[in-house]
Length: 123
Image (cartoon, rainbow, N blue to C red; front, side, top):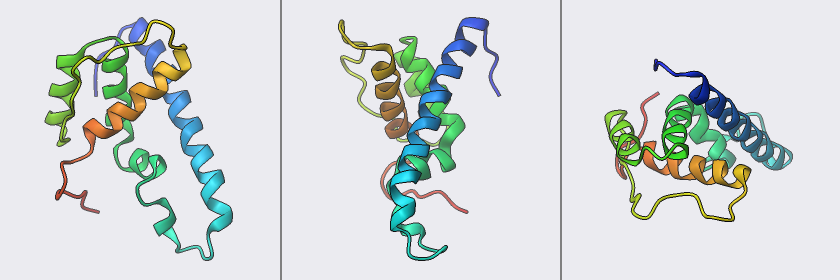
């Protein structure tokens, strides 16, 4: 889908790891509350469902945020059908841990790639 260099691939790999851990944590939290195999409503508005629907877009958008390509991030998200988001004053905090920075990039990327209100993904 996209051409990446070695540095970008390393960052993409770190982002995938954090995204995967977040999805697994949500599933572990939700699974015990499921009353039937068809009780998918527990996953509504969860990162797990967003990742299932938009995973590759979230990863690439998070990578652009991580490396500071703000305009490219917005252009990418909107070109993929996302609603974009406010990235004014976006950046890593001086004392922010790398893992927390990646998680924040994932949260912001998720908001950016999801369609604007009123537009749902078709299955």
